[in-house]
Structures are given as structure tokens and as C-alpha cells.
Length: 237
Image (cartoon, rainbow, N blue to C red):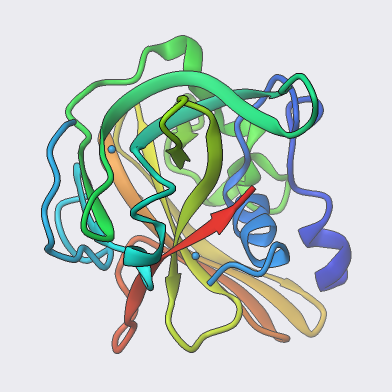
């Protein structure tokens, strides 16, 4: 299967605007496709670049001070659906894991909550359930969910989303996710001149998965790549 076809055929349990949490690879692709460079309750000026405890997101946003007057609250959600605001625009709904104020160009989220099972997806509904990848999975009964970090204004209206991306790498980003148990996904699958490489070791609770796309391969790992400098970016709705 060719690269483009594969990356556009890995998503959903249902419409990605309804009834589903985005899959790991499709989530990355969506972030990149909207020009991005990509949870409870206090804020600081320290910067978390994806290398620290995945239960704490202590983020300094690139050019973050520019948004001090726009963003009031940051929420970490397990997204279930997208809804329309009257008069236009959309917002995401789901399970709120955490929230905190936005100030001084950043935010701090403490992901202390477990995620109820009804908000988790079976692995066969994610990229890990694909026919080619499933043999690499150690526990096919595991469930997982991706985290979205959303921005809200003073009226509690969603106005954008934050993404963690590898600086100076066009197609590389990181995703926070929750799992209900430990499992691994390790192996390489070749599609002619293109290949998927998985070196993922998930622990029960919160994790960070690093994804990178090139013309030759898609790589997914839970080990932060050597030399990678991850930064938080804000994208308005």
C-alpha cells in the first residue's frame, strides 16, 4: 500500500467528527495537515518538551504571550464528538481529564485521573489493529485513548488546540495517550519501498508516543528521539 493511501485510511470508528477518538497515525496526519508543528490544575513558566513525566504537561507555548488576552482556560479532553456552535464554528466534546488557567504564555496540566473504560477504544479500532500491525501487539485486549489539549476564551468557547511537535521537522509530532494496561507494539512492516516501524512500550496510565513521517517510512515510538527538540504550538480553530 502506498504512503498516501495508507495515511488516509487509518482512522475511524465512525466519522472522525462523530463517535470516535482519533487514531494515532491519523491524529498526527491531521495535525500536520492544518499547518501545525505537533493532562490537573496549576500553571507555571517551565517548559515540558515531551521528555518528562507524561502525567504532567508543563508547557511554554511558542509565541505564547501573544495569546494571553485570547485564551483563559486550557482543558485536556478525550474527544468523543465534534459539535457545531450556533452561527458557525465547531467544538469538541468528551471526557474532561484536566483543566487549568492559561497565563504567561503557557499552562500546566496534571493528568492525575484514570480514564473510564467507556472513553477508551479497543486496539482493533486504532492503527494498532490494522491487519499488518496487529501481529506486533502483545495484548490485543488493551484499550487506549488519545488526549486533545484545547483552548477556551472567557465565555468558555473553544477557540483552538495545542500541539507538541518536533522543531524543524516538518512531519514529526508527539501524542499523549492513556492505556488501561501495559502492552507493546514492536515490529516492522514493509510496503514495497515504504515501511512502518513500531517500537512502542505502553504502560498503564499516561504515555507519550512520538511519530515521524518520511518518504520512506512511518516510525512510532515511546522513546524520545535523540536530538529531538519538541515544542508546544497553538492553532486557532
